[in-house]
Length: 86
Ligand SMILES: [Zn+2]
Image 1 (cartoon, protein in one colour):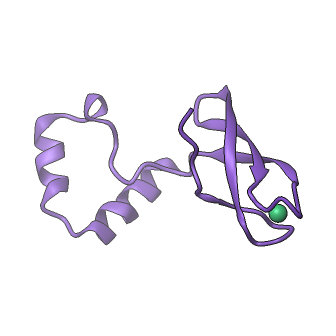
Image 2 (cartoon, helix red, strand yellow; image 1 turned 120 degrees about the horizontal axis):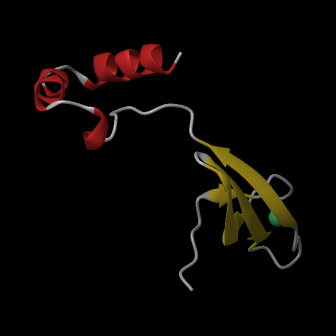
């Protein structure tokens, strides 16, 4: 199984590997991790949730809306996405 190294152990600062991901609901998952530092050996559960879309999925947008958004700077797209999520 491929291991991911995006998690930092809060106990020792070393990388923690995601061993299992449990999808609790749409946009919310629990990540079961283990620290790579054998001296620490902590097992951890992180909660991961979707904050907002930077770009909505293609299925949620018309072609015209997608083309209009594509010409905007990324910061403006992010701001629009943030406002739409509220
Ligand atoms: Zn650790």
